[in-house]
Structures are given as C-alpha cells and as structure tokens.
Length: 180
Image (cartoon, rainbow, N blue to C red):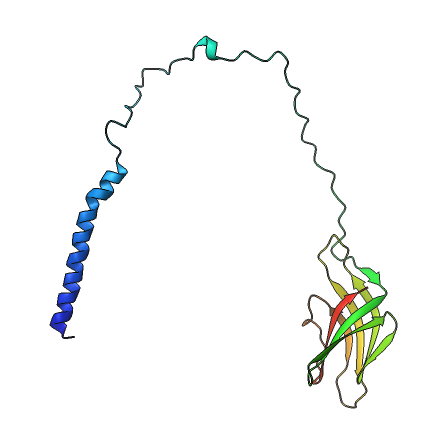
C-alpha cells in the first residue's frame, strides 16, 4: 500500500468513527434523562410530610415479647499447642526405584527395621499432629545402603515437607507416607 492510500484509509476510518460518535450522542443523552412528566417535583422545604391518619397506626401489642437473651459466647474449645505431636507405633514409607520406576509402600514398626532391595530402613520414632491442628506426620529414619559407597540418611522426615529433609540417592527416592 502506498503512503497516500494509507493516509486515506486512516483518515476515512477517523471520519467514520467521528460520524458514528456524533450520531450516538443524542441517543445516549435521551437514555439518561427521564421524560419531564415522570419526574416528581422536588419537595418544598417549608412543608413537612403529612402525618399518617390515626386509624392506620397499629395499636401497641398487649403483651411485650421477652427480651432476647444477652449474647453469651460459646465455650471455647481447647486447642492443642502448635508444637504438640502424638506418638504412633508404625511408620509407612514410600520407596521409589528410579531405574525401573516402581513404587512400593513399606511399613516399619517404631524401633524396628525393614529391607527394600539394597536399603535398610530403621525407624526411631513416628509422630502425628493432633486432630485439631493441620494434619502432618514426622518420623526419624536411618537409611543405609548395603552397596559400598552409597549415601545414607539419618534425620527427621516430614510427610507434608518431603523436600525439607530427603535421602539423596542415585537409585532410590524415599518419602514418609504417614504414621499409624
């Protein structure tokens, strides 16, 4: 398109837009203002509104309803402190083999050990949060690999924060699934 044609197109578009704008202004103005016969006249400041006739005022009730009871707050339920944990007797651990992508749940009693392929998993303690606090579980795990030179793990593991403390192993991922 040559520059002259482009200017013509732009100016033509502008002309059409302005024409449409000026055509719509009267319709918008009419839609906002109600007709003069529908608008009530403003009240005079000196005049007071008329009082309702005596027959329309309902008589007071013969019996007064009893006053509502004062607002008595509901008794507060005792909440557990945020750092309270309840001991459990068994931990459930999910182990994934990264090579063949198999996942298996292993249940280990507290104070006991379990084997999964070349891993030995020992649980020293397993705790859960009380029911009135957000659900979570924590277990102290000691994980060793029978193959020489493989990393081990000896720390607390949290169910809701698995990346906080995890086994860094080239073959296995271990995650706490819960305590029972």
